Image (cartoon, rainbow, N blue to C red; front, top):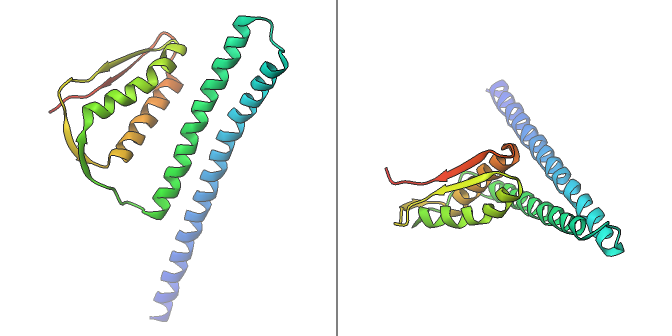
Length: 168
């Protein structure tokens, strides 16, 4: 019995150590994901403040880069908050009824400009009629945003992304 208990304790310690190492790696990755765009934002904004650009076109390009990097940082911070939330409440979802079509439309609107800037066609095929579901709205919203972030990140210029919803 003593040996079995010692084995269970060792297994629990190993699991806790693995979870702790995974958490540290996630925080390190998120820190890097924040540091890189922040450095770009600072560099481009310093150039704007100093007037170190060659014309209106370059100034507008700097502003677009700052805007895109700030949006990226917002998503990274949302991921960090989600990690913290999941640590506090692992596997717990807040189920509630909501209109999935409305959620898809509101998320799609957020990505139209970014897709256009990236030269990617964004097609949203979402019905006007409600699609009532009972799910964790925030979790589904995050999952949808993560999918669209990845689609935009890896879509080639001239490509297309389609978001569709339908009742089946």
